[in-house]
Length: 197
Image (cartoon, rainbow, N blue to C red; front, side, top):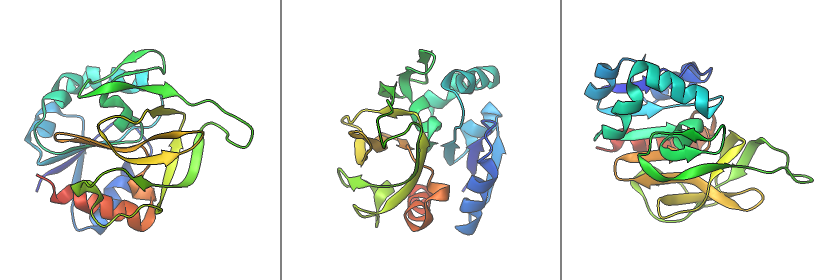
C-alpha cells in the first residue's frame, strides 16, 4: 500500500499522518504530482480558504491530476468541498470531481459559525467507508461552508438544517468532519478507507 497525503499546507497534516500510523499504515506527505498518481490511496486534507487551497493545487499541478485519479481519494473538511465544482467562498472554481457546490453557513442565535465541535452523524445509505459506523455517533467538525444533501450523500449532520457529512461518488469520498480528531468513529472510517480499492 502506498498511502499519500497531499501536502495542502494545513496544520492538521501531522495529526492525520499519526492517525494512519496508529492503524499500521505509513503515509507520505507530498505535493508531487507523480507520487500522487502512483499512490494506492490519496488523502486530500484542507484547512483555510478554498481559493488559497486551489491556488496551491494549481501551483503543484495537482488541480489537473486529482480529478483523473482512479484509486480511492478521500477529501477531508475543506478537502471534501474542493472535490466539488465550486465553492461560494471567494466564488472559487474547485476540482469538479463531484457535481455540486459548497455554500456559506449562516449564524443564528445559539448556532455560531464556524460550526465547531462534536456533532452527530446520521447514516443516509450503506457505504464501505462507513462500515461499523452507526447513526448517532459523534464526529468533530470545524467549518463555515457546507455541501447540500445530494445523490452522493451517504451520511448527514444537522446544524441549522441537514447537510452532507460524508459523500461518495465513484472512487471519490469526502468527510466534512475531521476523522483524525473524531475518536472511534473517525478511526473506523480511516481504516475503512484503507480497505477500499
